[in-house]
Every structure is written in structure tokens, then in C-alpha cells.
Length: 314
Image (cartoon, rainbow, N blue to C red; front, side, top):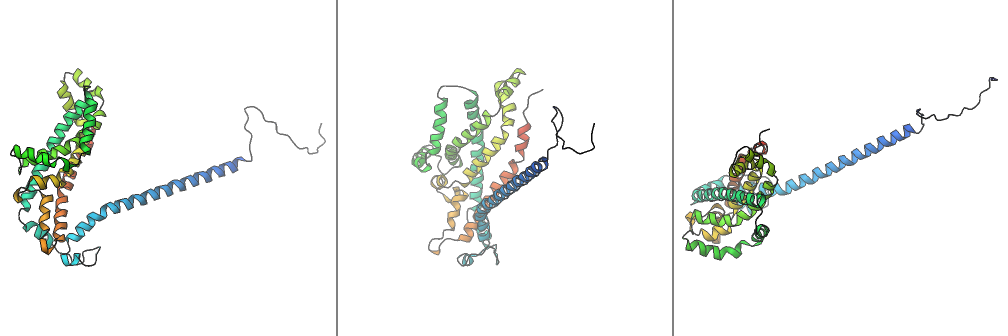
């Protein structure tokens, strides 16, 4: 029986029952605050990374902008106080480039040598990368080490012997001779780079194509080649830039004005006692960069297509 009085009650936990806890709201608030702090940290980290990226891009792009800016200024303005914007711009420097002797001849020489170098380097390097990645043969490791050693040898160390060889072959002052010289320093880089891309293609894809009746050579070019297309494009771009901007070999091997390439042709703007025509140098340098940009825009569309091509039948 009860006497109607109130007595304190004791809550006994029952197994399987849910017991309310007065501390739960505080824990939820702490978790919410920690999540908010974490989001702020992530946001701050992202902002810092973006700012660093903007600074790096600005530092990389400023020399290009300054080159273009200077190409629109007269030599008198260039020697005066620097200006971020060409207030009194002129096209005289570009006219001087187009009117100077051997410009179009040097442009043609550069195009021919560069395209030949890229085509031969990619074809040869692709076959070499296939041999290194797909076959095990004696001297394979030594060959890879030799490629790295050749990369470390300065170009000047090979200059005399290379010129003597080309003179013996009667290939000095010729497109073929300069192409051979360019292949000597472009091939190690292209072989080493393409080796990584070829190794990333599973060998089972080629074996499946061979089971379907394809020969090993056909399996290489119908399966592996399309899948390595992104690597070929990237390697081709770097090979193009190396060959297009090369100066030392072209200066020594092509010593006739009508045989020189554009990087060597620019030295004609050093006008002796009159000094260097910096406006012409910057205008010519700006024009020289255009083919590299055009080449990149033409080939970059094929990168994605090559990543999905070449699959075997399901």
C-alpha cells in the first residue's frame, strides 16, 4: 500500500533497453563544433594551396608576358624605364623579323628537322620500349643504365666527334645530318619515357589478341600502340620542344646562313657595334613559340581517344 507520499525513484538499467543520457546533447554539440573546425581547416588549406598555385603560375607566365610586351616596344622604350603595358605599341619589330634575310628559309629548316626528329624518335623509341618491357634478354639492365649515362653526358662533349663523323659522311649543312644529331640526344629521353607507358599496358591484352589469331607484331600495333597513345603524345611534345629550341648542335653543324634553324637565325639581331636589337629578338622569340603551341593543340585531342582504344573483344 502507498501512503500518497513521494519517494525518489531509482532507474535500473534493463538489458536491451534505451536509457536517455543528459550528456548526449553536449556530445553532439562537441562533434558539430569539431566538424566545423575541420571544415575550416580544409577550407584554409585549400585557399593556401590555390594561392601558392596562382603564385607559381604567375612566376612561370611572367617571362612569357614580358617577352610579348617587349616585342611591341621600340628599342628606345626598352632601354628606358620598364612598363608593364606597351602604351605606345608598335609592329615595327615584327616587320623587321619578316623582312630580315633567311627568316622563311630558317623557318622551313626548323620545321623539317623537328618533324623528322619527332617521327623517327617516336618510332624507334616505341620499338625499343617494347623490346625492353616485353622481352628478357642478356644485357637488358645494362642497356637501361647506358641510356641514363648517355642522358648525363653534356652535348658539348660529343660535339667534335659528331661533327667529324658528319663531315666524313658529307652530311654537314644538311637536314639529314642535323636530324641524326638531334636523334642522338632525343632518343634516350623518349626510350626511357615510353618504357614506363608500355610497361603499364597489361601483357594479357596482347596475348588475348594473339589467341584471336593476330601475330605478335600486329598485336603490338593494334593493341599496345593505341593504349600507349597518351604516352606517345606526351613524349612527342617534349621531343618537339627539345628539337625546336636546340641551339648548340645547329650552330656548329649548320654554319651556312641558308641552312640555319630559327634559334640560330635569331643571333642576326646582334648588330655588332650598334648593339642588340632586343625588340627584334623578342618579336622573333614570340613567333618561334607559336608552332609549339599549335603542335600541342593539334595532338592533345588524341590523348583521351588513345586511352580507350585498342581493347580486346569481350
